[in-house]
Length: 109
Figure 1: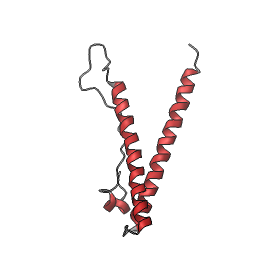
Figure 2: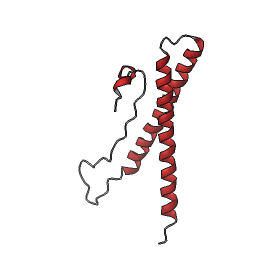
Figure 3: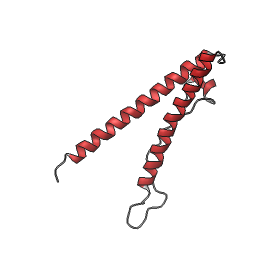
Figure 4: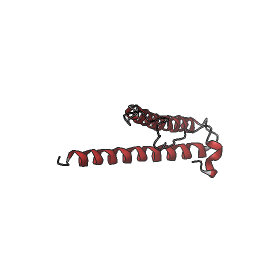
């Protein structure tokens, strides 16, 4: 999703997409694809890389702003806000995942 006000910065800032569940292209005879775990791991890795990339972008722009090399301070403000929101989203997802895990582990068989 691109915000129109910061559309010009989309080339310099990383974008984070949330991929929905992917259906198998052809179901196997047993009904399981065997790649669900690796798909989840790949999505998790992609998300964490996006968090790191947004933090790196914000840090780089902060250094440029501090040294006077940044001509448009709005770039830093937008990058810092985006990095903060992405980090908050990752933290919330982590907390929800831990809560779900604890709830599942608390169920009696």
